[in-house]
Image (cartoon, one colour):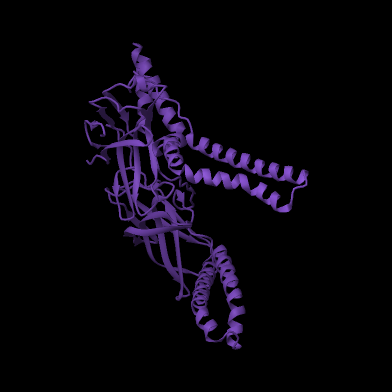
Length: 340
Length: 123
């Protein structure tokens, strides 16, 4: 750390832009109402009241357009950098880092051996931080130490959601469809309805799949996955046990450890998330237990606001020989601590 | 004309918990009407998703406050955390950089970066 200058306390300029904008709007709104009230008070004609109400906003817009370049420059000047914003949002980490390193350095000046030891411990604490790692916790298992939680949406909730969307869409489309079938609207309406009917059929398909998934879950009962180690460490091996509570036997066909990249992005007003499985490791079964290993050079779990690298244990199988069943369980892959 | 800025790292291949050391220098001095100088060490993502960014070190010098005290050259040492590792995936990529941002005049801005990798030491 350089001791010649102190870090400047961040000032949130983004907030000041918002406050100035809000104050301007309030002033213009108050002016509009005040002028309109004055005209009414002195018995002015109705059209003058409208002019008095609209004029402040109109003048405001003209001034805004006339000074657009200056306002843009002012906004750019007043907008804080992305690093500034990020440093503010993680102020505890950054300030803690500043404060603790400063404290460590002041301790280093002392000759006391005990203080030197405290100093070394303090610096090591800073180097042990795991940033952008998701929080995935397990509970105690029955056969193995860690019970995993399902990463999937509940089958019941999925079914209700699919039903509501399907019923809403097809309910509206059916009104027009009945008209088209009765001959109202002619061929124009029939052709116009085709894409809406196709979407409705797709939604029916999604609902049927959700129904099959729900029935499979109902027959199989609660499926629990337990693992021998957690968090998982690259280069290690671990065991998986699958327990079920339902009366129909789940026939597990494949158990895998999968790494999935997830990227969320916005186009206009639509926010979408793309996922891609980038690695799959299939388990070997041995006496009802599944053995998996993670290669040494894989990426650890990572989670930020719009991007993530997720690790999951996935199991696929069927019930009654034909109803498919699939479930995923989130796990944390955490690298071992490395300090030189 | 933009002023010359040198931002250099002693080592650009680092492991978790290592110390990042380097310096920046502005040989001709700060541009006239400099408003702020910001130095940060950060990770950020690129790829299909909206960019995420995490700052582990941030120091700024602002006109009228601390800018007059900006050391030129400025040397720094920053302890790196254990994660996230530098990563080059299909949808997600993670980069580490030391970044210097200088804002001057009404709209002038200079951005200088020194990338480095944070990867586990093998063996």
